[in-house]
Image 1 (cartoon, rainbow, N blue to C red):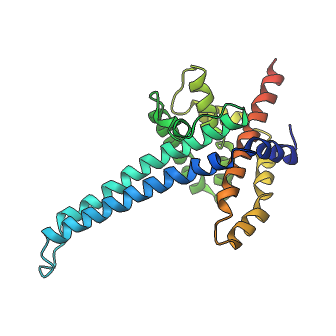
Image 2: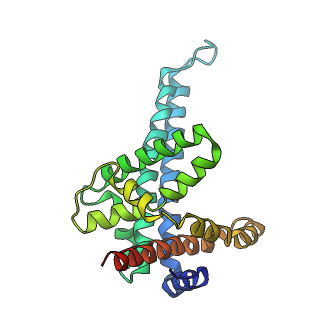
Length: 230
């Protein structure tokens, strides 16, 4: 396994000359989604104000529609998050796609529902473990962390998948490496503090750096697992 220093250097090497792409990859989709969300809420609130009597004390039924944008936003965020993981992994592997393709990876070629169902199962499993005790929940979070990367590789390689197959593979892949990944996360705390001191502006660079390092960690795990099985 590569050291933390080597993984971070690999991430920085991949990001060199690609910082604009990496920052736009997470800023633009989230900005667009947020803008659409607020626009829909504004329109619904406007319709509700027109169709309701402010002196009646009753809430217009139209206001119930305000939950729809939030639901749609949740669905969109799942696709964006999966696209981020997949695209940073491609970056680490030297297969960077154009921004438009990278940001929509999970929405193309019938991939979305695979990511959605797998992510749903992952969230449910983590929640159930957390109900038992907080620490087991954290441990399982690390066990399942590589799920989206594994699902991407399975889909790209044409392997059959189920809603839980990638979760099972992630648990096996992270066996014996959860502590390494935990310490890797801790190593970013100093940078997070500095990014916070810049009123959050520093996160525009820190988030791509962290994401690329996560992808490098996964890529190294897979390479070592392949060597061990040969």
